[in-house]
Image (cartoon, rainbow, N blue to C red; front, side, top):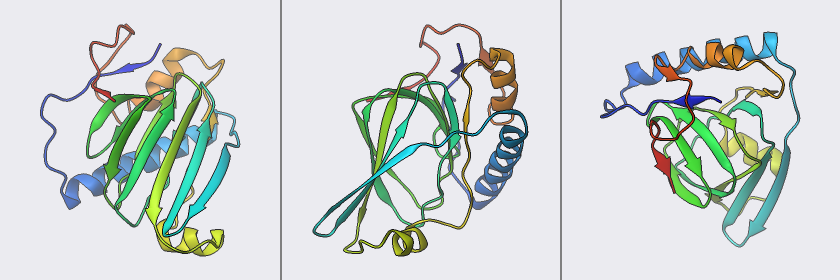
Length: 179
């Protein structure tokens, strides 16, 4: 199983760190596209007065990169267990139920250990999906691939682009759990 170490004290996020992190995610996305089969994930859109929620249903075994949001917004993981890396947090394990805020420009990489439901919540009255994408998301193609059946060492190699230290145990004591 795949595990990731949480840094003890992450450095403050600066433009230089974000640029480097984004370049590393770009490299990972290129490797993912070239060696793993892509998958389509189900997205469900919810609307209420002044609120748009985008629910992503991620199957267990999927390795993915997230969309780059232009705004600060709420994230809710209502089901599942997913290892997540971002330049702001480093690697962490997110287990449902969990809720947290994302800052603009955040890029994430995730590996779903269990079927996971991840919802982003945005303050807006807009209901047109094309317009919402233009308003909320930076132009960039995120990647979703299946890791199911892929040897663990291949997944480890891909994720080593982001994380320097990885272990082969799965006891959970080396990751921060977000709940």
